[in-house]
Amino acid sequence: MDCLAPATLQDLADGLLAAADRAQVDSHLRRCPACRDGLRALQRVEGYLRHGRAAKADPSLAESVLDRALAGQFAAPRCTPSVATNPGPPALQVSAPVWWGRLAPSAAAACLVALLLVVRGAPVSERPPVLARESSPLRYTEQVGVGMSRAEIVRMLRAAWHASPGSEERIRVVEAAAREGVVGFRARAERLAVAAPEGQVESAVFAVAAFGDEEAAQALGRVAGRRPVSPGTLAEALLRTGSRRVADRVWALLQEDARDRDECYVQLHRLSGREASRILVAAYLGGDGSPALRRIITERPTALARLRNELSSVSREGRTRILTLLGEAGDREAVPLLERGLRSEETWYVSVHALKRVAHAGSRDALLALARALPLLEDATEWSASREALALGSVLREMAPGTGAMFLHARCATRRASDRRRYLVAAGLTGDASVRPALEAALSRAQECRAALLALAVSGERAAVAAIRPYGVSRDRGTRRCALASLAMLGGCEAANVLSAAMRNSRDRRTVMNCVRFTANRWVAPVFVDGLCYRDTREDCLRGLRRLVGGRGPRSGDPRAWRAWLGLDSQNPERT
Image 1 (cartoon, rainbow, N blue to C red):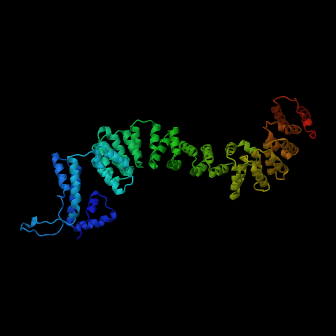
Image 2: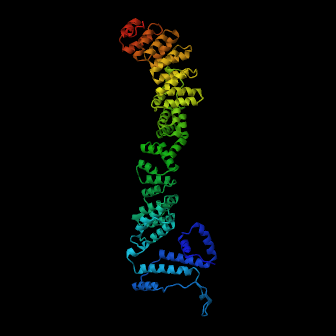
Image 3: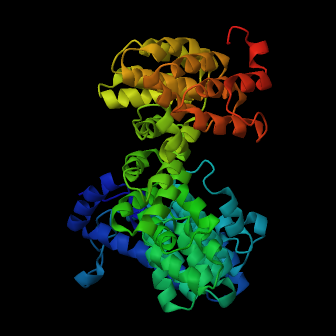
């Protein structure tokens, strides 16, 4: 039976044998006692080199040993089966195994060199790097990984570990192992952290944390259980591991370390995962509204997700806080929840402002949600009396250019008639001049005519008066009322002429007065003057005129006196 090569046994003893070859080697060892004895011998040598002490010897011994080695006097015998020449007990007639003939020369040379260096000593420049105690660990940790294979890195790390005289040098070796991802040194790092002197505890603990995995976090917990470690040091070490399961422990350590609350939030923010987000969200819902905590939560997707989940299980105050923070974060995934908040009077304004922030962050869904929240009003008169409409109007006017075209596109894509009308009004609220042709074209559709009139009114463009004017004399009373209200909202001389003509119609007189009663612009003066001619509108028109001129003017309600005092005949001779 062929025995294993010495290099294979050495790799097996060092733990460097590939996994693919391990099964074959183990099978051979079960059948070959000689190779098993050789493996045990190598393991005993390694254990002696690790834990044994060098004996003091006469310097002349090294000289003689070296001379004999160079002269070839330590050559090993050939491994040939033979029978003893002289009779003797069978137990003493043992032949060397096959692999010893290949292993003995190199093993003898290595032992001789090691013995020479231990006994005689050599200049630092002539010693092997792994045995130069003064500088080899530091020099190694600076050069590790440069052009080395994985097996070479592990072998050099082990050599540097045994060559390190103290814990400080071994800490550097452990840090190098962590950088190279040699997790086999994690156990050594843990033992080193337990046995390190007081002045090196922090460095040793951080060396354990440098491996950056769940096992490193568990090792830190065992170290803290076997020796005292300051809360701040342990918290920092756990944070460096990046483990997601240590959030509760880190939070408790940070509070035990008596740090500032905001600093605790910042340190906990270094941990990713849901556990840290749960702690941060609980602190926010508990009443802590510090800017640092709010900023941290808005930067964590897992914290925003937890806020969305908590929305249905918190109190009214909690819902308000959650909606506000979701808006600050510009969370697009929260748009359905924010739109649902528009249905409640308690959270309506908070949801509107939150949707506004999300829309400014670039969310199209948030813009459409704001448009769908617009109340369906009959005409512009009701618009001025609706607080919700005014609030949504001010929000939509702040949107970026091009929003009106987006609303028109959404109008074409939806089949719900109520949403189509709302999108028309929203397009007008943006004040985009490019949408006016589409709004004027919508006037010809019976289902959208009134919404288009309102949209043209809230757009604030007086050029739209020409398009609205024909509907001021429509046969449909509702359309006529909506057109007059839109003209009153836009104002101007052309609108005043249409409203004055409508004052002559008894069916529209009260409608016109309701539209212009609280108007404080001078363009409405002709409408008030014409209204003095009618008994049912005289008092209202007189009060309106006195409000316009600040209490001055003729004392009577004579239309001709007021027209002359205001100079309306000279400005417009055809109005007599």
